[in-house]
Length: 133
Image (cartoon, rainbow, N blue to C red; front, side, top):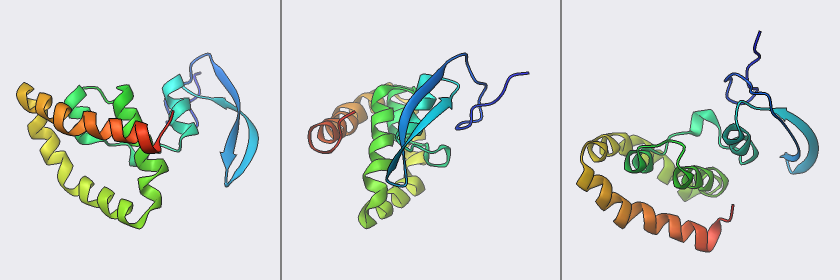
């Protein structure tokens, strides 16, 4: 009988990850069993399942697991979510972006425009100033 991942509740693969993880500001040695390296990476960066949507970027790339989408989610959870204005922005984004992403996802030209004028510049700013993975 397969066990489920302790993080995402998906089936566990054959790999184990041994690492120090940050628990309330303290490093603790931990042997983790995850369903995939992606799951392990998101656990290490505190990307929780209930905070998982990055609607516009996912619509642009048509891939929830694209590295840019992952970078944006991690930035949201490690930086924006810790600031008062960041939490307000996240709340605003979750109210309005699903509908916008739905529209963008249906038209190739809108995906291209969102990529060039929104996602790429935002990702560049995150990489240059605040976030190194």
